[in-house]
Amino acid sequence: METATTTQRDDLAVVLVEPRIPGNTGCVARSCAAARVPLHLVDPLFELDDARLKRAGLDYWKSVCVRVHPSWEAFYAYWRGVETSDKRLVGFSKLGARPHAETGAYRRGDWLLFGSEDKGLREDAMEACRQSGGIRRIPIDETHVRSLNLSVSAGIGIYEALRQLDGPPV
Picture 1 (cartoon, rainbow, N blue to C red):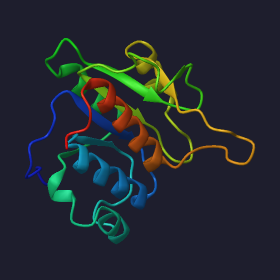
Picture 2 (picture 1 turned 180 degrees about the vertical axis):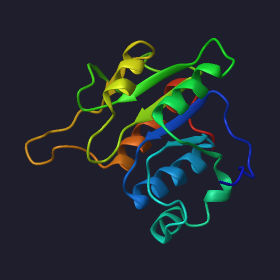
Picture 3 (picture 1 turned 180 degrees about the horizontal axis):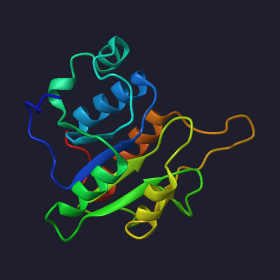
Picture 4 (picture 1 turned 60 degrees about the horizontal axis):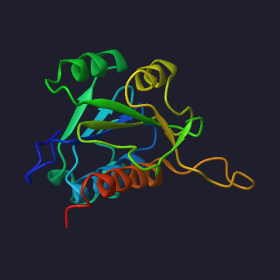
């Protein structure tokens, strides 16, 4: 993917683990561009030249730094090699024990992980989050809806983290 033409934050990142729907990934990329947050994609995923992906991200792809990792194991090795002592993996799942908006939930160096639309975060990713920054839950009324859309969840997570860190870059 292209390198971002704008300055990206170095204290927050978004990771989509095995996303399945191009439009959702495009929408997340757009949110990342708006917040200047880098985006990591973990294979397997769809073809990145998919027309629906480009349509969903419109012309924002040039404004987000996207890195594709060939597998969860490759991403995790990459993340462990990032040289900063403050990094944490913070997962999002409807199975999370703590609410996403809890005071002090985020800190600089967090990597926000979201799983696939059909399966959520895989178990080894969940375990890595449990050992690091924990797993957050976005509360919803499950009477009529079983989950939120991936791109909606990512947007909520990004902007709550930014609000707690220092507010969104406006």
